[in-house]
Image 1 (tube, rainbow, N blue to C red):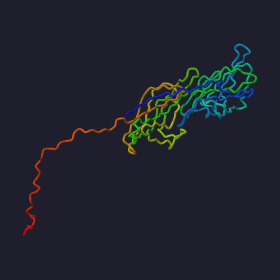
Image 2 (image 1 turned 60 degrees about the vertical axis):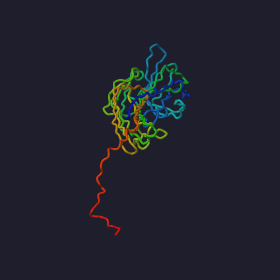
Image 3 (image 1 turned 45 degrees about the horizontal axis):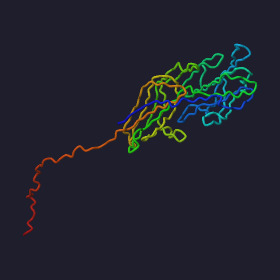
Image 4 (image 1 turned 45 degrees about the vertical axis):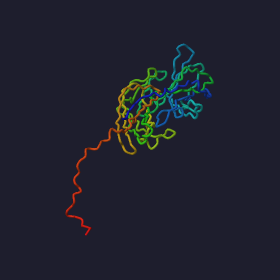
Length: 349
């Protein structure tokens, strides 16, 4: 007998870090920016961004003078690209060294006593914003690019001594990966292995709009399923081996899907499907066309593992019911009747 169990587990909300934790040497009076932290992730064709893989973001920023009540808010950065890299991080994934810059033609300067607000976005499209920070961000999941957002508010300008504006980025998307476990007892059923192929989720959103205040909304459901491909083998660094061919998962072993995928958060009805093939040695002994429908709620900044467990748990056993007795004696034919045509010669003469 085989059992199939599917559970969705939220691994952990991605950790945020206050910008005050990052110490960066001042760069003079010009306004500069620094990527402080993006949560680390694992591999297996993982499209999400980490602190050390982020190479660019765009900045929006405003300033407001303190010289009078109701001083106007003035936008000084309107989607200006900042490029660079983090070269070193500490044990918590925070940047300890790096270099970031933007084009000289967009250079702005700190004004002593003014208040500044900044927002940074990676891979999103700002739909609309007032003369302040972005309000809504549109996103299309087809490109599978991680969507990041950060704010740094109520910074006081000085004539000198302002360090780079340090951003701690949040993931606005959810992330999912499949894991598969062969729950068959490890001994003595080592010959039974599974291969899992064509893993898909249907019913997820393909496009959405993120409101900085209200969160995700205005979804468009994808017409095509999101593919995770096969359960594969990984090396010690988490890289996919054997060109992504399905691995034979032995008893009591667990492997991951070829892809980790980014998903637009929200609640929706989804369908998960895959093909699970059972082998005894090299021979196929069963094929399961697995499909499950359920309601799924995804939260931004959270990684999910869809844990699929399949195994054999009913062992083949033997017993003795009875040893049949002999049937009643049956008279056998007279096989000793002499053959008169072949009488032996009389050896006494």
